[in-house]
Length: 138
Image (cartoon, rainbow, N blue to C red; front, side):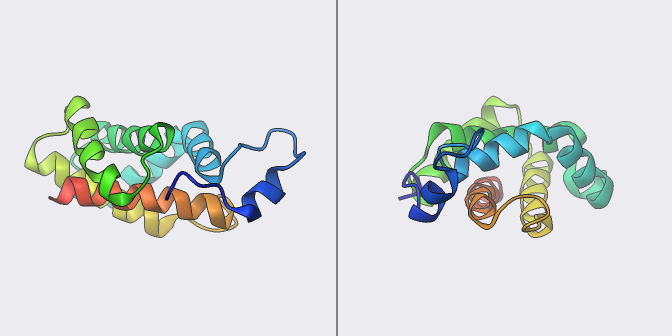
């Protein structure tokens, strides 16, 4: 269950000022805080031929943050919700969906531990990126 907080994270966050209550929320916070940098990096390194547009990448990262905030319990539950969120964001054309899938795959591979975030938050973020990738690829 994705909603469970590990004992390692609980021990890390206990008494630590500013620590998120879960690794997933820590990942979401970092993604939101660094959104412009993340989107710019994906666009710069992937190019618009693969990702369609900056707006598609931005929408994809917002979907990832929403999946964390909503607390989907598993990949099976997150994929259909990611499809709904993509549609709500206007990412429905085949090229845009392919771009969102590519952005998710690229960012999941580019994410660096410990440079960008700790192991547990990175793992949580990669789970949601995988859900987005699957949703956009279907």
